[in-house]
Length: 212
Image (cartoon, rainbow, N blue to C red; front, side, top):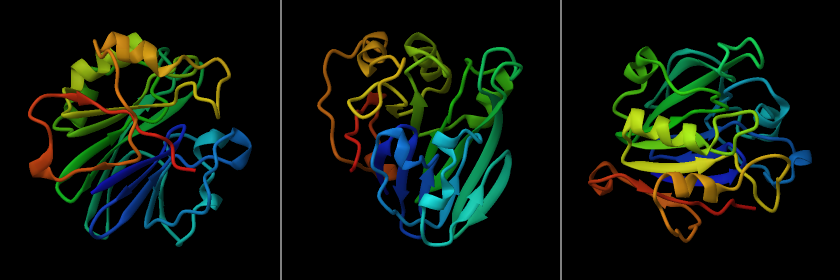
């Protein structure tokens, strides 16, 4: 299984039987999405920078909310969460997705705005790879993201939705999250290639370069 970061909250997860793309964004955001194809597209919420499904080719199955789905031997479970710390009263709902590809469990938290409840942790338990926002503003910030990592105890952590040269705004830089995690320096890499047997024994944080 390969995981490529396409920028912002958008990843391409390519397995043996299917390709999944998460939270596709429009060209106006600042990143260059290109014209990727997929069998499955997950959308965490309906903000334009996370729901540009027309940018994805291949007539994918679109998943936009909580529930259990199976497409081409890929299991997708959507877990109801919120975009803010006020149970959605400020910014609405958000769906976190647990995606099982080639026996590796990947969790994409979308625009999560709060630390998880005990029920949400139970619904997401057993995650191998965690893709989570760390840039604050409209999502959890660095310290909250570190707390979510402690809640879920994944083997691999990949931050997303933070300030880059392509997108700045009011987002915090990823260095804030790395500091919270006690990580001094990481060299970004173009993609992650993982199997169930190659997962690290103890948790590791990885940075990905966004593909353009």
